[in-house]
Image 1 (cartoon, one colour):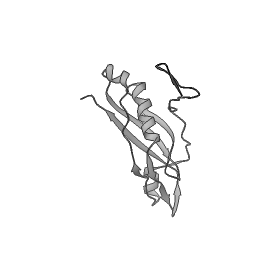
Image 2: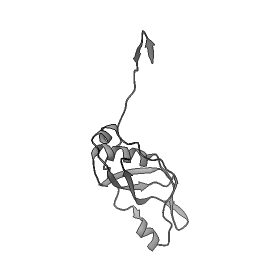
Image 3: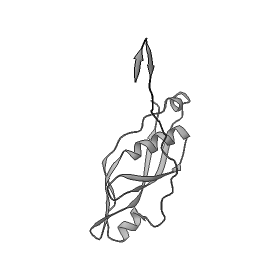
Image 4: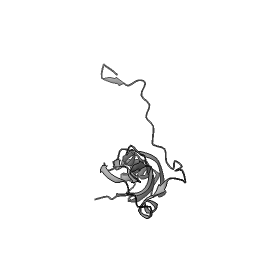
Length: 126
């Protein structure tokens, strides 16, 4: 970081958008499958709301983004797939927020297991 003569220069920083539509392995159990097997579904412990992208706000884009995500055994969010999209900027913001969520992992036969959850995030202009 260099701040001389009113100029700001930032070096060696890489910004990356979250991956959209990462494949979720088909063998990962769904919430419905957990219930049928006597297990417990993942439970949200910490969540953040997505930031409304400025470009989407200016374009007056609003709506819901539906995602399917894999909750890993440590409670973090693994691969995410956007299943219902309104706008790419909203998708990116929703996936980034979901990746920051933390869950109590699913439990089957007394052990934590990865599981698939469906999450919907809403974007509404006021």
